[in-house]
Length: 519
Ligand SMILES: Cc1cc2nc3c(=O)[nH]c(=O)nc-3n(C[C@H](O)[C@H](O)[C@H](O)COP(=O)(O)OP(=O)(O)OC[C@H]3O[C@@H](n4cnc5c(N)ncnc54)[C@H](O)[C@@H]3O)c2cc1C
Image (cartoon, rainbow, N blue to C red):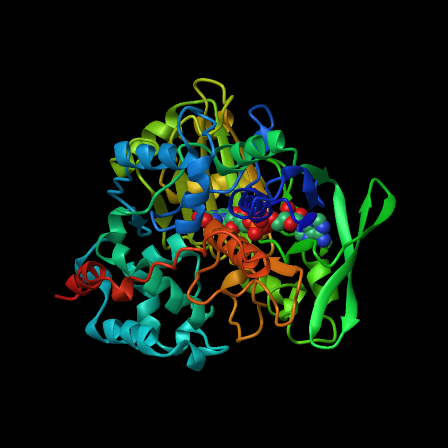
C-alpha cells in the first residue's frame, strides 16, 4: 500500500506521521507532494536577520487535542530529550501571558472596563448565536445578531483581534469559536489560557516533524505541483487511479492502486502570499495554485465542496490581511513598548490600537523568536484587520504601503514620536500581503467544505482548513491534524478515533466563568 499526500503544510506532515503512528504504514511507502520549494505552508519562516524576517504570529490553547497528542512523540527542536508537546506546555506554564494592556484608544489610554463593555442585550445576542442550531445559520453573518454598538465594545476588539473575525463574517464559525473558547471568556483581557510557542511555528512545529519523518524514509517531493488526480468510474464509488504532477518542468503520471491512499490538502490560508520590503509595497501575485486541484476535482459535482466560497478575487476584500514582521537591532522599541504595556517582551500578548484606521494589532515575541537570531536583535509582528482603510498618519490603505510606511504609522499610533527616528533606523519591517489568510471566516453554507472522506470514496481523503468536521474551528493547525486523523481512521479503519472536540458549553466551570462576566 502506498500513500500519496498532496500538500506539505502542517496538515500533510501530520498526516504522514499519523499514517506511521496510528496505521502502521511504512514511511518509505509515503510520498508528500509540495508545490512550494519549502515545506510548512502557512507556518513559513522567510527572510533573514540581514534582510528582515517574515513569519506569521500565532496562538493556541491546551485543547488542541489531536495536535498535542501527535506531538507527544516528536522530539523538540530546543531540547530533543523532551517532546514538542512537553516543551510547549512547560514553556507556557513557566512563562504564561500576563497581558496588562491589550486595547488602546486614540489617546493612548488602556480600554478595560466591567463586562468588557458588553450590555445585557449584547449578552443575550451572544446567547442567541450559541443557542441557535448551526443548521439555521447557513450563510448568515455575525452582524445579523448584534447591534452596531456591540462591534465597538472592548469584548469585540479582544475577540476579533485574537480570533480574526469581522462583523460581516460567518455566524457558523463565530458560534463554533464561542463554544470552543467559552472557557477563556472571563479572562479574555489578560489572555489567561491563550498559549504561544517559545519559537516561531516553523522551527517549533514544522522542522521537528520533518526531522522525525525523514529517518522513517518518507519521500518528500518539494517543487512538485499535483495538477490532477484521476477517478475510476464505477457507480456509487469514488476510487483514485492516477495522480499527475509537475516538477522542474517535467510532467509525471503515477498509477494509484485501489488499496493505496490519496490525501489532498484542498487549499491554503497562505495561498498567493507576497512579501514586500522597507522600500517596496508587497505586490499581489495571483497564481491560484493552492486551490487549483480542489477546483478541478469539485468541477461539475457538489459532494466535493465549493472552493468559490473561499477562493477567487471576489473573496479577497473580506479575507485579506497585511501582516508585518519587524527585525530590530536596537533596544528602543522593546524598552518603550514594555514601559507602555507593563509587560516584558513575550509576556504581553497582543497590543491592539483600536482607533487606528487599519485596526493594528502587535505581538512582541518571546526572544529569541528564531533559532540563529543574532544576539541583541528583537523580532516582533503585527497585522491590520482592515488593511483596505486609510492610515491616520500615513494616509493610504495598508495594502499600498511599504514596510517603512507601515512602521511609521504604527510608531506614531503608539505615540513613540520621540523615538521614531532611532527605531526606524534600527528596524527592518517586512510587510506581507495575504489575500486569503482570513477566508475561513467567510460566510459559508453546509456543503461548502467537503468531509474528510466524501460519500463512496474508497481511497480518497481531504485534509486541511477547507474540510468539514462537525464542531471543529478553522484557522488552527488542530483543524488540519483532525481532518487528517479522521480521513485515515475512516479509510484505513486502523488506530484510535480522533479525540472529541472540546466544547465549553458542556463544561460547567467554563460556563460559570463566562456567566460571571455578566454578574
Ligand atoms: C498569518 C497566519 C496566522 C496564523 N495563526 C494561527 C494561529 O494563531 N493558530 C493556529 O493554530 N493556526 C494559525 N494559522 C494557521 C496555520 O498556519 C494553518 O492552520 C496550518 O498551517 C494549515 O496547515 P495545512 O497543511 O492544512 O495547510 P497549509 O499550511 O496552508 O499547507 C498547504 C500546502 O499545500 C500545498 N498545496 C496545495 N495544493 C497543492 C498541489 N496541488 N500540489 C502540491 N502542493 C499543494 C501548498 O503549497 C501548501 O504548502 C495561521 C496562519 C497564518 C498564515
